Every structure is written in C-alpha cells, then in structure tokens.
Length: 280
Length: 191
Image (cartoon, rainbow over all chains, first blue to last red):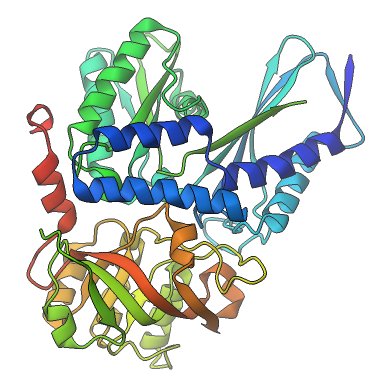
C-alpha cells in the first residue's frame, strides 16, 4: 500500500482550481490559433483574436479569463493500492476548492439547492467522480464547467434501428439549437452507450481529453472528424456572429450498451475550455 | 450587416440614439451601465409587482447581464463577461416598458422581448463572452447599489470607457445571429 496524505490532495486541488481558471491549456490555445487561420469572417476573426488576448491578460494578471468559474468537477483515478491518511478524501477536495476559489479571486457560483437557491459561499461541493484502477497511482483531473454551455447540453435515448445517422443528427441539432448561447467556438463532448447516466458522464469526461486529440479507436476518430465538419458547416461561428469555426474539437467516448439501447449525450464546453490535471 | 467604424455612444441613451443603430454595428459605450442578472431581475420584478422602488430608474439606461468574479486589490471590478440573456427574458419586458434603452448579454432573445424592444425603443447588444478579463479593463468605477446579499448577483453601477459591444437586435427586426449564420452556413448543413 502507498500512503497519500489528504492534505497533499487538498493543496493540489487548490492549485488546480487557480491554474485551470487563469491559464488556458496549451492545446486549447493552439486550437484557437489554428481557428484564426481558417476563419474567413472578419467578425469571427476579431472574436478569436480577442479570446487569445483575453487569455494572455488573464495569465499575466492571474485573474479568471471567464467570470463564470463554474462547477469544480474532478475525475479522480485512484489505485487500489493507495491508502488515504490524515482525513477524508472528499473533505480534502472540498477544502481545496474552498481555498482555491477564495485565494484565486474566483466566483462562487454554487447554490445549496435548485429550489431554495442560497449560494454556498465557497463554490463547494465539488463534483467528484472516482475511478478505481489497479496499482498505486493517483491522478486528479479538474474540469471547470461553466453553466451557459452546460445548460445547452442534451441527452437522447435513441433506438438501435435509428443508429448512427440519428446520433450524428442529434449532435448537430443540439449545436444548432444552442447557437450563440453556448458561447462558441465550442469543444463538444459526446458520450454514446452505457445506460442513461453513463452516456452523460462519458460526454463530460470526453471534455477532459487534450483539445483535438483524436480517440485512439480509428472509427471513432473518423466520426469525430465528420461531426466537426458538419458542426462547422452550420455557420454559427465565433460568438455566434457567423463564421466557419463553430467548434474547435469534437471528442467522442463510447461504452458497451444494452441490446435495446443507443444512448447519446452531448455536453458542450464554451470558448474557455478549462481542464488541468495532476499526479500525486 | 455593416463592418464600418465603431459608433461611440454616451449613456443614458436617447430614443434617437438607438434608432440610428442596426444589427452588426460595432458600438463603444461610455458612461454608466447597470449590472443585473437572474436573482436581481427576479427581485426587480417583485418590486414592480409590489409597486416598490427599483434600484435605479430604467429610463434611458443600459443593463449589463453579468455576475463578476471578485476583484483583485487595485481593480475596480473582477473579470465580467456577459451571461446568457435568455434567462432574463421573463423579466426584460418589465424594464423595457419603463424606458430601458439597451441590454448587453450573449445569446438569443425571445420573440416577446424582441417585440417589446421594437415597441418601446430598446436594443440588444452582444459582448463577447470569453473576454471577461479584457472587458473588466474597460470599467473605471464599480459600486454595489442594491441587493448586496446576492453577492456576485447584486445590482452594480459601473462607469465604463469605450466598452466594446455589437448590435444583435435592432428596432427594425435585424438579428445579427440569424444574419451571420445564414451568411456563413454551408450547403451540406442546410435543411
């Protein structure tokens, strides 16, 4: 067994919160620069230039590049040979979020209940998904998830007969309906398979893949390319002002499913695609 | 859709000011803006229903839909980009009927809001979400004027200089989102 102090997890989470909210990942910045090369609309190009300039200012001043510093979502891969000492892992993650959002001047956007709507005041609770893996590694991946684009996400239970064509149509239709509301240029997470909730979780996890890195499965990688092309044919463009670049990347994740099912979930991420990870 | 030089406007705006604007016009706003989003709009609607005071007189004013992040010391306002305007659709006509001349946000508005805008003379401006740090640099002063308990959702009065926006919906049925999408859509995604 390897012992990991929960305090170390807490500090790592604090740093992830600040890092993810103030520094756009290098792959995402590259994707924005590539988009600038292909965008033909003058307004679209100006939006892309402003996004890049904004990212630079945020990094220099260590301030959030988007005011919606989102839900703090964590995917935790924890080896079965890891033993946490010095406290509870869940509490350590929440404490890290509390400190990161306070010390990083990040907005606290979480309310206690969808009905009662009092702000929790510290952006907790974190949203945490644990994956048990063999060995003694521990990896935390944070996704900062804004609500504007999350609100435009969708899930549909297709039938096997409707199949792949209906899946593609649903993905493109979700983006058509989101239009400018999800703040393009988008990163699109798609989850197919599993039961209902698995598809949604896969769609969210797909967003943590480095921007534009294709799925290792060549068929899914081809599907990602095809979807990206169709999405960029919609003309929605950067900020929805019209243009060639509506999405920067499409990431598809697949999982076995039931003989009767073809669930598909689409989770949209905005211009500020924020993910960061650490191994402890 | 025009791609000419920015129009510089000073708030409060007159009806004549907004009559000159068309979808796609690039505008630089100067003067006061009022910040309000979901919870503040719900309270303002309640105040109107109870014939109570509003935090500000909407006549001629521009509302900015945002909930800023906390400001670092030395900054008047933290990062503040626009939030999705459609969530304010149930409330916006109440302010438009009382003389509101402009709204700044992102995303599409309902037909009901667009109709109220045309009827009473109010335009909807888009700011680029994802430029929160840059937009905050255009803010000279910021002050919470009501509903302080709402934190990031409190009503604020800002003084801005050359705040960059673009006209999405004008008084004549123009809609930059629809026009832009139509212009750049490729045949393969039609229908």
